[in-house]
Image 1 (cartoon, one colour):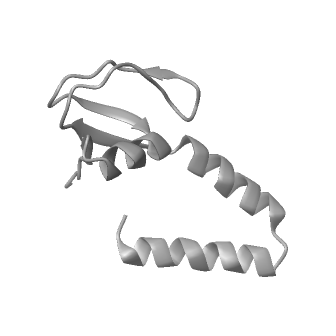
Image 2 (tube, helix red, strand yellow):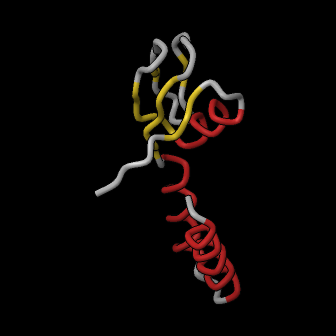
Length: 88
């Protein structure tokens, strides 16, 4: 995500909080929990249980997969996977 997208999300959350829009916040939280992104694996990885409690993998080096955002971030931070950027 770009810095602009992140700032836009923060502004939407702050606005919803200030204006008491709890349904919007609940919807946002649910979407964030299930958001998935595409990653390319830099190492072999055994089967994992995703943040959505679904099973993913096992993966071989250079495999590409769509996995929950939360799991992807953990793998990216450890340099086990990298985010695949799509261009239209």
